[in-house]
Length: 289
View 1 (spheres, one colour):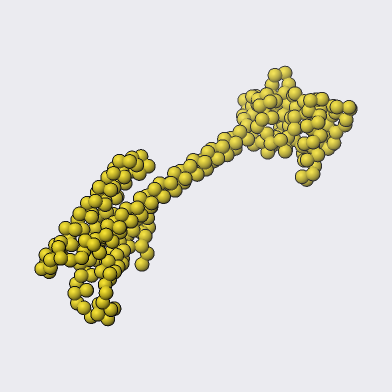
View 2 (cartoon, helix red, strand yellow; view 1 turned 90 degrees about the vertical axis):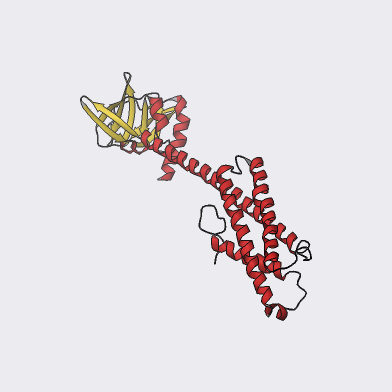
């Protein structure tokens, strides 16, 4: 039987608390006994004492459990640590210790035994106090550990949400709206062959041979495109590497040579500022093929 329940905060379940009460009771009753095991097994008073001990231990454990749940709701450790610690000591440690004495005295009265002559205060009572303190520490550790995990999960979730939003925004940035007269078309960047800027107007040529006007300048388009797939060769033209067959070089500038089936009527020169970047990027593109 597992001690922990399937709650989000893994406090002991009722069955777990019952097993815990039984183990604690056996330990307290047997600890300090000078008689042999055989004498204890055949002594009916031991069983009576054990039954009452289990009942008292279970009552105290359930009390600590229920009060801890209420304090978790009213004074969470993360928000009211000092106040929660004070209430935890008062309601879940000192009061249960007092209840333990009251119940034990009732047990002695019920069986007409003299409590003052017993060795309870010097033998079993210190053990009972120690176990009550340990249970409070255990519950505190469970709750604080759960809170830390919850905060970590929240940070992770926010990070995932942030990455998801970035992905969504990136995908949106890869979709453009083109206009041609009264016609409008939405196309993905994968359909783009090249972009050129003429007379203050942006034109996007697509893989299907159509050309559409889009409201972007060269720099804006360049920031949105994958540099592994597109290259700006001059201030007005961005080309897909798939269109380029080779290039010519003239000192620190050059000109692209497009594949034979590519229809392009723009400026094919590679400016001095772009030439070194173009050579490196084109070489990497070819190596990836």
